[in-house]
Image 1 (cartoon, rainbow, N blue to C red):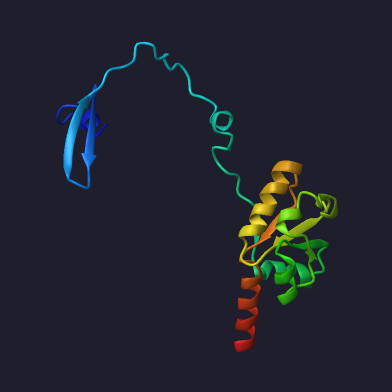
Image 2: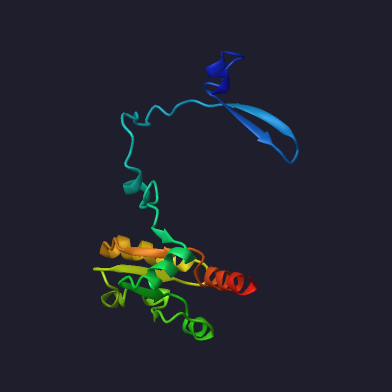
Length: 162
């Protein structure tokens, strides 16, 4: 493609360039179009072909500071923890425990009429839960607590060290 754009050298049209990095050898093979191959006249629908969205929609996130402000201002929110019960027992912030594997089965416990903050240890499982809920049930009111419990612990340690 660079040769075509710059007009320098001879393009590899009808040939396939092979580079073997192990032996540091190169070969050029002649190739021909299969006459039975149908012509491409339009682009395909990527989502339909692959079964996944071409661009993943981003999820809403809030920081620990924003979350703390919501709590301080007595915002009407629901807080859900998607960690496992043993993790919840070690440290919890009073959230409703709905482990990630059970989120879709317990969807009736998740509010759709107010802000819902979903958290886990670091933010990865909660992001997965949010994607599942948004895709399967159309939720639009879900927020991922950025950094999860680890971020809350870090923020508290900073406050104590001051």
